[in-house]
Length: 138
Ligand code: 5GP
Image 1: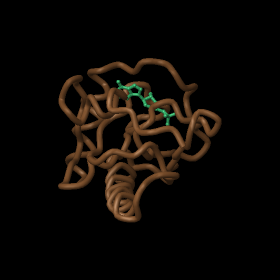
Image 2: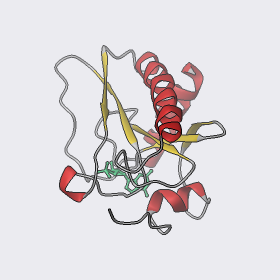
Image 3: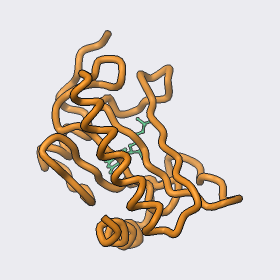
């Protein structure tokens, strides 16, 4: 398996080298807003320690991340008065992964509302407002 690369975009976010809209963090994990949201409230949860994805993560990394995923899924569902939550996670390029630091997508969902197409930059002011709603629901 390819080694973890320290110049990936989420490693830079963790080091504070590029900005992000953070919504929650604890000792082991960070949650921040996706800049190309496929639903209002689309956020990402990552471990603070390096691993590419589920295939090389330690049990401790997986446990910490999934605990934070659950916390943020509950908060995001409440913040957006959503009926459901989609949690997505991709492994290696063939599995749909684009950023090679383990992350889970958390997407509040409403009945009959499709996810938006991937790859379209969101409105940063709207994303900041969505982050505030999720923080308030935590
Ligand atoms: P995946 O690797 O799971 O396919 O997707 C990576 C995700 O990271 C995408 O949803 C994309 O919108 C998001 N993303 C890519 N670059 C950045 C960035 O610089 N900041 C943030 N917050 N999200 C990013």
